[in-house]
Image (tube, rainbow, N blue to C red):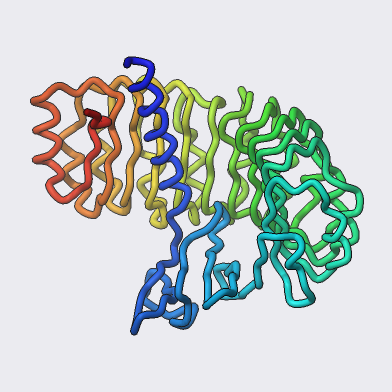
Length: 354
């Protein structure tokens, strides 16, 4: 029974992590039975025409459906007709999402493809013929068995998004840092031990996912990436780095599996775009009162730390929608106190099971 509860506990942690990944600065809205997309200012980005529409993948793309036709949609509202079967590729196909497919030869005749997802295919390298797909802007080879960073990608000069999550990559080649058009990079859940100081050259990078590797040192040059909007890192910190305050466009940050006995939010307070903070599994024992200065925060994850109480200043977070704090050491009285301090927030103290 204990093992069963622990497994369910980990599942909920995963679901909360996913929730933090899926929040976008764009919103799906419904009008007259159809779905469209608005920005945070209420301005219509994509007209109301979709039967199904939801946030899809970590680089803020959406997936939409009109009748039997599927699309991927980026933040500018550009549509990419999508197929999930390699046999359905035609001259109009711009996006392909295939899993567990053994024969990929038909891909290379469709050089108009701009988005390619080849996930969970048990491949250990990226095929050389990918060089034929020169229109690619986004590739996803996550959840495979790749142990060397695919250098074939460096010949794709229009590439903006690379997702190599859940592979076995140990080293990042220096050529990657010359891809100045790169906007999104996910190397989450690999075996990477080092990030070069040359990361400073990725001046257009907006999304960077580095959690669950074997990093012990984070180069100072990372904080020079002024376009970063979403940043996830683990294992390289003993305190919140002061330089994070340089990332003025940051709207979501995840610093997990570090060692922060005490945490101050001083360096977050002037990041006006920051809405999501995830600080789970950091051995945090104390939260400083300056948490009350994070007026802009909407969601805060402090799960699986060593907290027994929260400062009363947290009541100043009037806009807080979600507070995730299960896996800590709050007693009954502290839980009641936190609920009174944040009466309008969705507070998760524990995993409820029968």
